[in-house]
Length: 573
Ligand SMILES: Cc1ncc(C[n+]2csc(CCOP(=O)(O)OP(=O)(O)O)c2C)c(N)n1
Image (cartoon, rainbow, N blue to C red; front, side, top):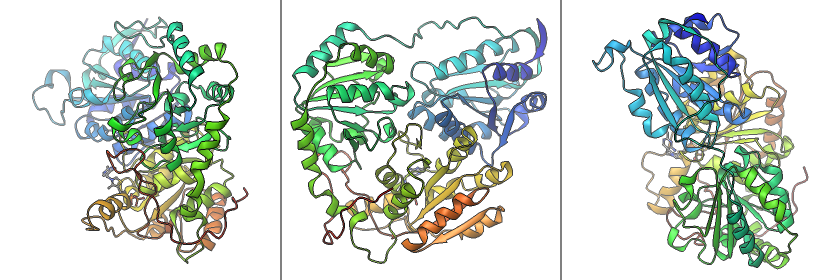
């Protein structure tokens, strides 16, 4: 046994957990941890706001598959993390948050920079801890990492009193397996339920797979593909499930839900069997629950038992690791044929192209769809795309077609504006060889644009595509559709984004016309360091189709057919 301070125990444990980088911001209550950091081989990224640290750690976790780590001091430092913690929670992202807390004897006395951070974050963490005694610190940290990464992943917060960081104790890292009462993740599927599900599938004529982020988190992409091919069942993905099934696969339908493809939502409503894999029937996906997939029996596979029957009543619920569950299925799954159904869905696609801005004759305007489609083509579909939240996010989901997993990072569950830039920085740090594009709106970008300074200081290269429409676009769209075009508080004036980039010592470019898009993308790819491109797009374009909130899934607002179809050929990559 060696005498160690709490601060040393923090770093020793992080090293043993394989942590290479932490994102954070110092202050009085975590200063012992910062001081001890200098003795350990860890990269620290100094952010400009703690929200940035939370999103970077989250982006890092999503891009690497490892646990991300973010640190902040007590009080305002810790509360600045809150949005990022909630974001990680809603999207099941494994992040360990370490916050400093005031000296334990002051807790509860409104000490300087004291807030009850475990109280505040209780509903937005998978689990959280307050550590006041150095003797508890080592085991608590090990548990935090274990809980964050096992079962359904999620954020865990450890609030550490300053004296617990300063005091010493005899300590050694322990390899003992962690046993927690009441926490038993990785449950194996029950064979009886798998049998029942297979029975249902054998009689279904219109089956559909709905693939969510659980496919990616459990690494079940290969199993999903084999399942879909052998059972000959088309696959629709959720916003967070993008990349779980190759977009160019003949059985791939595309995205479902509020801004999903019209034919996908139509197919869901007509289906007689839904196989929901690692998705949670979010309201953005189902629309009106009373009329959701009325003819379909439902089979739900999820690691989290709390998800079964939460939003949608299902006929069979299978709790377990999705990959293991699908493997069990595959042992018994015969080759099937649903050609009639697949062909029927293809006919539903029918007139969609005439409504796609992509195929309309040029009208001299630059549309977001153009920018994103071109980005997809010029990057060969291989970029790691991180988005912010708004219209651009939905256009990115629709027009950047991902064939590979783990190339798509977005705030789905919470819809957090300000997520894009910091998450992209975290993703690039996790995957320094990846070509990272942050697609952001002019509004959300400004929420965390200070992190450009972090990118510059750290020498992190991300390409930032601002889809600049001069509005808080998605809200403007709701005002257009549902509030009689009364644009309250949505027109937004922005600073000169090119100069803003330059003020940070970075490169800024501006694009007004479609002919300039390729050059700008090319220049960004060839330029060292972060590049910001200000794409000035059509101001009042809307995302179609749209299922109004709470409406029936088949009642979509479609893009009006404005122009005759001039060109239907798909662009070659
Ligand atoms: C932190 C936060 N505040 C408010 C919202 C509500 N909201 C959703 S989309 C949106 C507009 C986003 O505008 P912009 O970033 O310019 O992107 P665009 O929709 O124009 O692509 C707003 C305000 C949100 N999602 N997150």
